[in-house]
Image (tube, rainbow, N blue to C red; front, top):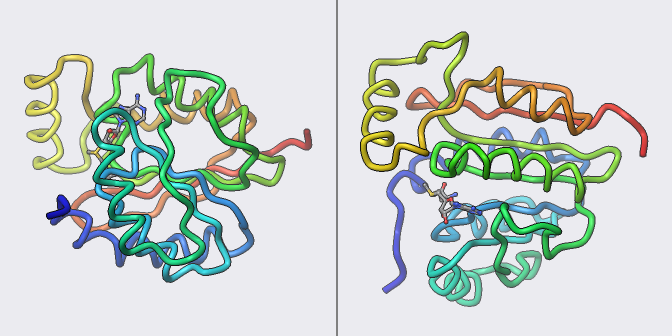
Amino acid sequence: MLPVSEACERNKGPILAVLATELAASCSVLEIGSGTGQHAVHFARHLPHLSWQPTEVGAELGPLSERIHLEGPPNLRPAVALDVRTQPWPCGRVDAVFSANTLHIMAWDAVEDFFRGIGSVLTAAGVVCIYGPFRYHGGYTSASNAEFDRFLRRRDPSSGIRDFEALDRLASAQGLVLAADHAMPANNQTLVWRRRRAE
Ligand SMILES: C[S@@+](CC[C@H](N)C(=O)[O-])C[C@H]1O[C@@H](n2cnc3c(N)ncnc32)[C@H](O)[C@@H]1O
């Protein structure tokens, strides 16, 4: 029995609607922290122009690989192990990176590695789409996100909902410029950065 995320079932439709536009001109997507693989299967199936590369760390990789093997369409590549903290990343150049609900799970130094890694694999016309909850100007977008952040930090003090402004500084250091901030259901966002300089 493969693990199932109810949140993925709820959010995959709204995220797909954003990716269909933001990744319309992309060819290859690297997904960081693919989790159960429900997103990877759904997005690859509905965006057949993309070659989708799912990744995971540690014990999560086994069930992810199994779902990809059982349910994956032809444009979904076999899952590979990728820990953002271990560089260089085991992949070639990609023109898009997607990640959902990962930055509030990783410690901050891993978030820094996340953007450093993106900087090294993303092509000159590359795009980065990050889904999840974020803080703005030091505040939460909802009381439920504030409560979720307290839960995260009690469970793991190195985790927590990240400040948009701090993420934008890391993105900017990699030549990325914010192109869109999509409000999503349940007080989430999809942040979209595009590369601003030729390589
Ligand atoms: C809350 S889950 C989200 C999974 C999936 N993207 C989703 O939306 O359901 C957070 C994911 O971040 C991954 N993760 C945590 N630390 C990581 C790291 N250092 N490198 C890569 N992935 C990491 C975990 O393995 C986990 O799958």
